[in-house]
Amino acid sequence: MKKLWLAIPACIFFVIFIVFTFVVRNDLLNSLDFDTTVRLQNHIPKKFDGFLSSLSLIGSFEILAGIIFLIVVFRKKFHSLFVFIPFALAHVIEIIGKVLLHHPGPPYLFFRYNLDFLFPSSYIQPGSSYPSGHSLRVVFISVIIVHLIKKSKLKSAMKILLISFLLVFNVLMLVSRVSLGEHWTTDVVGGALLGLSSGIFALIFL
Image (cartoon, rainbow, N blue to C red; front, side, top):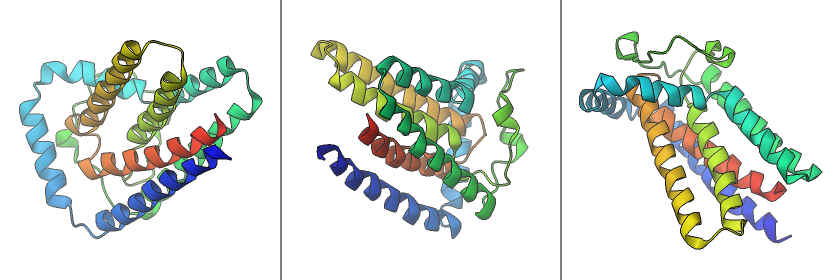
């Protein structure tokens, strides 16, 4: 019963996601999107594109869904499988947003992904770029991992170290979506909000 209170912050972040989606739909942040992309690409040297592109692979559906599956297996609790319900629903919302919301991604001149490999999910292009699936997935799984770290028997110093590393990883992942020209900033923010909402809701099943 105590865990049902998690539904409250999950719903709050989902409402914020809906409101933010309407703001994006009305093209109120287009100049912010363009300016942020230009500034990031001007300040992040191309020599870092390979590293940032590897983050793009790590954030793929295949990799992160596999990590979630491993977490469920190692927990050895059948009800943990239900974390895939909010994970799947979040992706359904993502696809609906990309199909119905007219929000084209950055033009090809901004594209800086430079690896020769792509997972099959990367070839799925519903039409628009909002919200970012990578942002959704990495925030979703980070919420779960932070929860498991906090509940573990590790020493406080180790917990702080691991959570700090995870925070840095999230920042790099989210920034990479924009610096590589794969998403606008609003796509990343929308995906992160959706991932935060669904990730918190998934904790109910853990």
